[in-house]
Amino acid sequence: MIRAILTDIEGTTSSLSFVKDVLFPYSKKKLADFLSKHSEDSEVQRILREVQEIESGDPVKTLLGWIEEDRKITPLKELQGLMWEEGYKTGELKGHIYEDAYRKLKEWHNKGIPLYIYSSGSVKAQKLLFGHTQHGDLNFLFSGYFDTKIGNKKDPQSYRRIAEEIGLKPEEVLFLSDNPEEIEASAKTGMQVIRVAREGESEFIENFPYRQVRSFEEIEL
Ligand SMILES: [Mg+2]
Image (tube, rainbow, N blue to C red; front, side, top):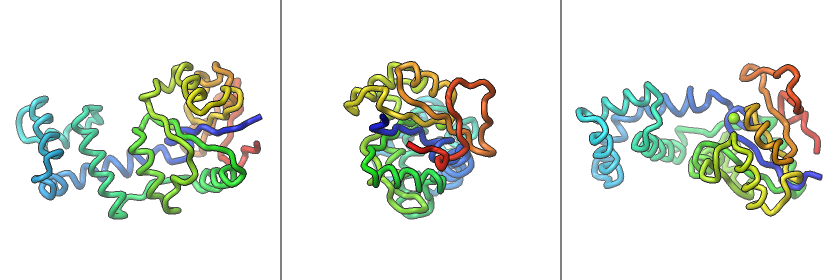
């Protein structure tokens, strides 16, 4: 019996290309403006100092280069976090959620099934995304959020910890993700799993030992 649902975001509830085609270009386009607008902000000043400690020279140029190369460098991630937060708050950015995911999550929530997120994006970024979607603030749907602080998404131990935090046995939790390795890791703990392979984003894997669907509409509890 499924007593809670745990879901991934990118490629599962939301478009894989959202980060690549919306969030990244946004931070690139707005960078210079954002920095001059917030030049008095002590957090922004600290981030810029850190950028210059890593690479001397014009920090704007450095940051643009890092965005281009998709570098996972802390001061860049922090700055992007601040920029996206502002973008969501002004309404310039809208968090993407697939219609079928929205309908089903709402249906499950209305049935009283607790819903949880597990994403490699920070909990803060998860709440921002779901707080500013095309359907408004959807954070009311979720009972909790997990990011990589609980562990790597490809490590079964992370799913055991999550089940424990939720207060259920892994067998009572259904995990949804587009990533086959995450599905395998979670299934190892006894969690129920369904792989979401969205049309145009990922393909069904032949002989994959777990169920695969194209959309949340196909999932009946
Ligand atoms: Mg994913």
